[in-house]
Every structure is written in structure tokens, then in C-alpha cells.
Amino acid sequence: MILLAIGDVMGSAGRDALARALPGILRRHQVDFVIANGENVAHGAGITASTAAALFAAGVDVITGGNHTIDRPEGEELLRTDRRVLRPANWAPSTAGRGSGVYRSRAGHKVGILNLQGRVFMPEPEVDDPFREADRSVEELRRETPIIVVDFHAEATSEKTALALHLAGRVSGVFGTHTHVATADERVLAGGTAFIVDLGLTGSYDSVIGVDKTAALRRFLDNVPHRLEPATGDPRLSGVLVDIDPRNGQANWVKRIEVPVPEHGASCRPLKGAPVAARVLERAAARAKALREQGVVPTLALLSVGEDPASRVYLGKKKEAAERAGIQVIERRWNADDDPGTLLKALADLGRDQSVHGVLLQLPLPQGWDTNAMIEALPFEKDVDGFHPVNAGLLAQGQPLFVPCTPLGIREMLHFYEVPLAGRPVTVVGRSGVVGRPLATLLSSKGEDATVTVAHSRTRDLFEATRSAEVLIVAAGQPQMIGPEHVRKGAVVIDVGVHRVEGKLVGDVDAAGVSAVASALSPVPGGVGPLTVAFLLQNTVRAAELVQVPSEAKRR
Image (cartoon, rainbow, N blue to C red; front, side, top):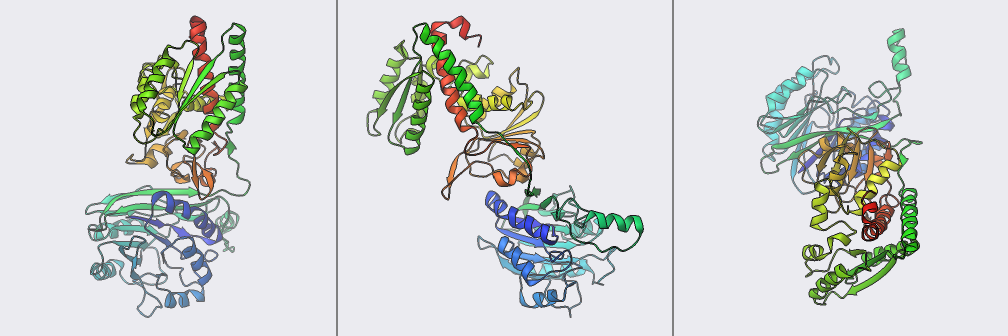
């Protein structure tokens, strides 16, 4: 099971960041249970019924507390009435509320949560020994479940580390809160206990640990206790994701996340495909015209099987664009119950037909049709989609004949918008032979010289692979799998995916969230899509040129 622990939620900026970022995180990472520290959720100090309700509405399952939990009188009443709101278990027994509890995750697993407060450098309120309270509470919780997570609200790094080591092997995780600064020491201790010294701040990062920087600076400079107010600029959600084995409660891994959310007026340059495609089509049309003037009519054969609605739409767009560019189109269709051998024969015939320069087989094929066999039967010198094994091999050798259209379009988009590639870290998420693999080869080839990493849905640390990239290209085929937590600040992001979710077209990237982090992002729809068709036509013209004027065409 995946558990998300969220660092101190500070004021309205923290509530807003959590409300806007959490739904996407839950979806992308299939989170099963969420805890959040809410001791400062009510205007920077304490918690109220309405602010707690806002966190629960966003998807939080349990709210933990700390030394400021009852700074507002309403906090005590909330502790009495809502068992999902905890305060440190080592407070005086007479204090309202409870310090631990067992809850059900979305998948039905029992999850034990324990809240403790440190004593080092934290004089108020006075609390009992957190180590002995931890021993007592953990023993009690383990009678019900092996999944136990501890929020240790403490100031000193040493005290937090010591408690984690004290509980190693007995709990699933120990996560520090209180300092509002996320530490980069997340790890899994012996016995499967995930640990981080501090989960960080969920709130304004244009601040001094969440409070207005002007007032905070005046306090330091004047040595006068000016009133502190929560800040609002640059809101972010901070925390960790941890994978826990529900059978024994041991953590498999823990990953730190920091998710910015867009501010009003935030700018992320849209990388639109239409102007790039227009330039490619203009060049292709000019070259097609020159061939016609020499008596050669560039001709594209469009082959399809079955009545897939999406395929019909794509074929229509390809035919329309080809005719506008001066390319003649021949359409051939087969029914799903036809003999596949008739398509194989047609491919062989088209290979011999010198009047046909490009052959495209629309995918996917219906069940029972061997896609690999059909692609291998394509005449590779007319394979304008670039899918044939010979064309894949030539690309790998650095001697490309025809390159798949989408990778060509992405490269052209990066050139058009003047995104430098040479020497830069580029990550391609997706390893298909249609986009991911040929694109990685293309961008790492001489002349482009990018340093390319290929990642995919099974990559062990996808965060590391994607956050290291200055250019991130996502072609994984999973709706909105990449969020702002995956993206390096200022990165250029290309979204190749197209999916219909709840009646809307979306990509592989959570555009709303990623636009808060990226410097540029291709939209869906309107990004890469138009370029695929444009390069299909350019490849067709090139195929005709190779027949008519091979020496000249090979130099292009």
C-alpha cells in the first residue's frame, strides 16, 4: 500500500496547496492513506473545525498535531469530537483528545497512527518522555495492525533520529514535523522503517518557514516581536510517499515529494504544434510541387483494417493534409474478418509499384491480425512511418532512411522553439518502438548530442529519472502519470499522450500542476499531434525524391 505523509499545513496557502495538489497525487500514485500535520492550519496557529473539514474534503484521512494544536479554543472541542484529529500522545492525560488510533485505508487495511512531541528545545507545553510513550503506544497498536506510522513533532534532528532508531523494525515509518524545512535524508532503516527528519512545509515558500517575510525580517532586525502572519506566495505541498507491505508493515521505499501549485499569473510557455507543423507542411508542399513539375506525382497509399473510430479520424486527417500538400492518396481498406493474407499480398504489390512512393499501415490492427508480420511485410524503402525493422536498424546505426514521424516532430518542435539539446540531460518516459526508443536514439545522435535517459512505468526511481532532466518527454501511454513532483524547476516538458478522461482530452502529463514548475509545456490537444501528420507527408515526399533524384534527396 502507498501512504502519503504531508508536512505541516500552514494557513490558507497550505490549505489551498493541499486542496489543489492532493487529488492529482492520489490519482498518479494510487495512494491508499493520507496523514497531514495540521497544527498550524488555522491562520498559522492551531486548528478549527472548518479548517480540518477542508483537509478531509481534499483527501486527508488523519490530521496529526503538535505544540500549537490547541492555540485556538475550538481546537480542544475538535479533539474531543473527531477521532481523525490527533494531538501528541505524550501530552498530559487530562488533555482533550487522543494521541493514536487505528483507521481503515481505501483498500481496507488497518493503519495505526501515533502522534508524539519532542522535548529538546521545546519547553511548551511540557510533555512526558516520547520514547517511553512510543514503546507503550506501539505495543498497543501492534495488537491490531503491523502498519504503524509515527508523526514525531520535534525541533531537534538528534531527537528525531534517535526515536526512529529506537523504533526501527517495530513501526512502518517515523516522520518528523515542526521545523517546516524538508530534509533530504529520507531512507528505510533496518527492519523496514521509513524515516525522514522533517517532512517540510505545505504552504508559502516565498516566506520565512511559512510566515510573511517582511514581519519576520523586522523581528530579526529590530529585536521587537512584530505580529507574524502566514505568507501566501509560491504555495507548495511537501511530504513523502512510502510503500508499505500490509502483510508485515515493513516499508519497501520512501520518496520525498515537493509539489508546487500554479499561482495566479504564473507563466509557462505553451509549445504549440500548429506553427511548427505549418512550416513543415509548407516545405513538403514546395518539394511536392517541384516533383510534379518534373512529372513525378508523390503518392501515398493509406491501408487500414476494420472500423476503429479513432483510426478513421486519423486517416481522414492524413488524407486531407496530403491532398493539400499536393500528394496523391490511394486508400485501401480490409474488413476485420478478411483473410490477412490478402493484406500481405497487397503490401508486396505496392512494394513493386513504382508509382507509389509511400505506404502507411494504420495501427492498431484488429485482433487476429499479426501486427509484427504486417510491418515486416512493408517495403522498407516506402515505409514512411519508419516502423520497419530495417529502418529501426538504420536509425540505430546513425544512417536513418525513414524515422518515425512523432519523434521527428518532437525534434522539430524543440528546434523551432530554440530549446538547446547539446550536452543537456533529457529523459524520455516510454520505450515503445514508435516513439520512446527512436526518439532517444534521434536526440542522442551526433548533431543533437543530448544525454538521454529512457525511463518507463517500471523504472525503480522514476522521480530521480525525471527530476534530473532539463528536457522531459513523456510518451508512456498513461493518463496524467507525470505531475509537478516529477519535474525539475524550469524544465521543458513535451507531452505525447492523448487520452479521453471524463469526456476531456488529456495527456500523459498533469498539465495544470506541471505548468507551475515547467518553463515550457506542449499542450494536449494542440501540441505534438499536428507534427505527426506533417512529418508523414515530409517522409512521403522524401520517398518520392529518393526514386526520382536519389543523390540530391539523400543529402536532405
